[in-house]
Length: 168
Image 1 (tube, helix red, strand yellow):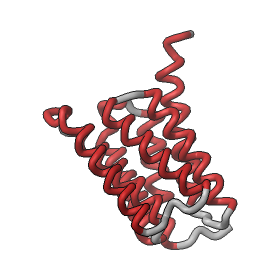
Image 2 (cartoon, helix red, strand yellow; image 1 turned 60 degrees about the vertical axis):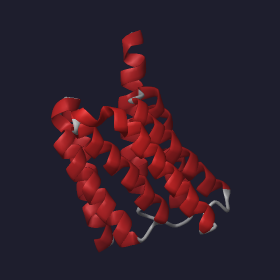
Image 3 (spheres, helix red, strand yellow; image 1 turned 60 degrees about the horizontal axis):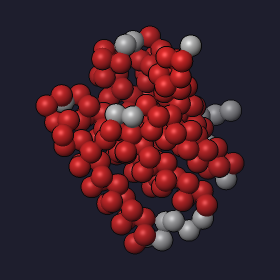
């Protein structure tokens, strides 16, 4: 299987993020998450995929705000404004026209709230919803969606360990 040139940054970003997720504590992984997210954003832009561009903007914003410890009170407000802007754009451009797109938008909202509240349960649910969206998008012929499916599966597993790990 050949990987299109436009997906190389995303593959590199996926590798960087998964490395940080597996090998580093969350506090030390922030620069890696930022670099990986930036590369994933490059792939979304190069592929001109509206959902993944919007998703990466929410993730990039959440990552940057998370690295700035003195703006915690603004995180939720900024992410809510970003989500409302994404909803406005989606409705204006007739984006929410099928179940896959609606699932994508719901996952985007859940992820924005997870960043805003720092909720591991929200990250788990948002990650699983994005895995579902990515699977449907890949089945529809978008090969780059596999990158987000793998990445969000890893995030969902990490969030599940954080949520349910204390139970064992």
